[in-house]
Length: 256
Image (cartoon, rainbow, N blue to C red):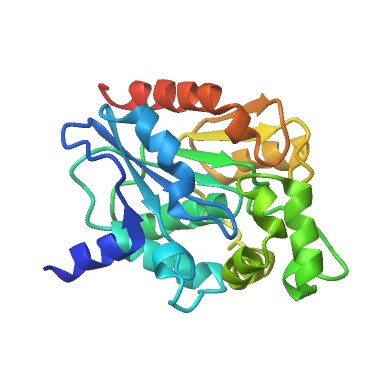
């Protein structure tokens, strides 16, 4: 097996094969999130779009692999896995921490002289140049405080946070991911050259409107913002609207 294909299969999950899909959407999950978070997206878009979901180390079937707790190394690995996928138009969708990674991967594509994505969807995350000063970062807090943070944000499996075995399984990955995104600093002057669609919840404590609008400073292409009802995980309840937005944008960039 070629090394690039082996690397791709280690990092990426394809839940619904779509060999005739006219476009390819790579989805990157939130801190602590598994690739399976995007199973519903894959089901909804197949067969018109081939959906690939990134599986970070330290969770699900990769739970015995060490976490990568910094964005540059994570982005390098994901770029290496995706770099040979040039046979179809490629778009990226990242939620929360995944949006930071989905921004850094096209930067690496540009550096390597590869075609840029046809579209970038930034969901539930402030622009890369916007930081928040906090006295004690989440990744440095106790397990109980991290669990409290997860409860506040809601999202999938929130009811399972009362299960000690579940917590033992997920907390190392969650802490490592928070460390990665909380220590991340973007390189000033670097811009994408593709259209950007920003998706944000109207009551998301992690993203203000000013922080969402600042994404337009990170691309030379057009930027559009969609504000949907909900908090940090608005896309769970608003899945039909999110799918409609993604479908419309990809249809405008490729004949699907």
